Length: 547
Ligand code: NAI
View 1 (spheres, rainbow, N blue to C red):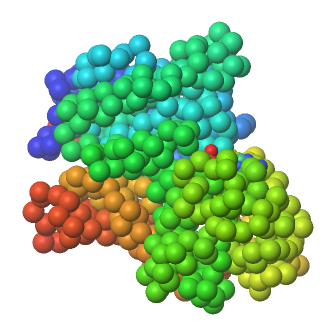
View 2: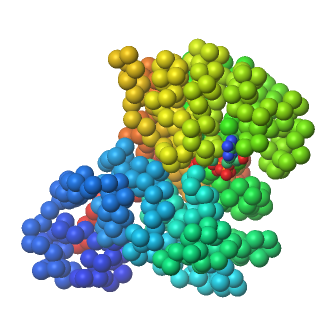
View 3: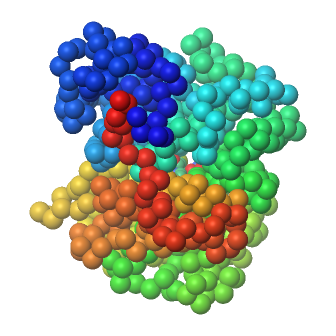
């Protein structure tokens, strides 16, 4: 038996029921004899490759995406290695199923498809005993936690405890895209209630049917969770996911210098978007230093993007103040300007002196942006006049409609290409199919955080970094953009193809770990060959031999 493999004395049915160890029909003759499996699985020994094609057949015969999602979750619960084989070898097809957009539907219908719990539920009833709850988790070596309180699930709003599908899906991507071993991953739902009255009234709802905990009691629970997580799982990195923006910015500020933590909605989104903007500049031949950005939606995603664009502009010689003035925001009340007295704190950095402007079209016409980025959760808001205005201002208008899931996208790929006569450089949060205009096919890009967070997480784990810094996200964006090939650019693609994602993540992980070593953020000794070390650590879903 390989030295690192521990069956914990399991044999027979116990082995088959442990998803981390189960191989189903691929147990060899020797293993069947040695581990009491004979008769418990059909007699013909198969290979993982044969199992893979059988599973793909099952999935492809399913009528709809939610059924495919449910099937994949149940596969993950019975044979983890096979699940990851299926996902890794078919990322283009599987990623939209295990993550956005299908995971959004899954969260909305969580009570209906709920079979058995995945991850750890910590509720407001657990105040005072959070550490003991965390100690119930069976894996001691957790290095990456994704935690949500379910208040802002994708662009779908408050889904309370049903939001658990998001950390589960996201951690699957850490494993599939960057090789973070599944036993190092822990999804956590902080069930602090929900203000979604429909859920509270639903007898099938799995969460606490009461309104959200707010104020000091909420903060105390989060504090207890952070302290317990760091004690129970030394060196753990905690990723905030889909918190409402009143808590998201605040909590990130509170913990970023005290713990190894980041918020993917703010920092990961910023990084993948900046990478896309760098590539868009390559496609259009335009210049970063003279570009103007209009961001529609001044929440976590938008403001995070704004801050990272400022950092990028500073690297090409633009002063901080001038860089901020290149980033304009429109929120639900119109242009974010300094004369407004209704602005949340996170918007103040970008509240410029300007006359009030009430709508997006007027903002486009007034500010003449080169890049229009939507992160509002408001579908259809990049209307025909807005997109046409961008097209009349720019030879190659950059239009990113980032809101998820697909139903929330500010415009569709087809609309962006049609209304710009195919000139748009378009990216979206959820995937769109190619669009043909006048016989010419356009391939929309997916500005998918999965290009960034798995690699960043892997780099933080591999270097045992004590902190996750903005510099790491900037370096990740640069690395990602640098992996876009000339051929990609020729095809209008602003991100590498998904099938390269494990290489992309490995490169980002090495770059992020390098920042940790250079900045003294780790006590680890730097390995001679950092990139090789990271590749060695990457989880591989091949079956291990047990005997
Ligand atoms: P958030 O709730 O923090 O922010 C939403 C913002 O949109 C708020 O500033 C709000 O004022 C603004 N808004 C709402 N209605 C508006 C309207 N009618 N006109 C203009 N602005 C309006 O949410 P967050 O985290 O910023 O996410 C926003 C969207 O971006 C979501 O749909 C989310 O799924 C998507 N997103 C996409 C990512 C990607 O493509 N890689 C990553 C992260 C988020």
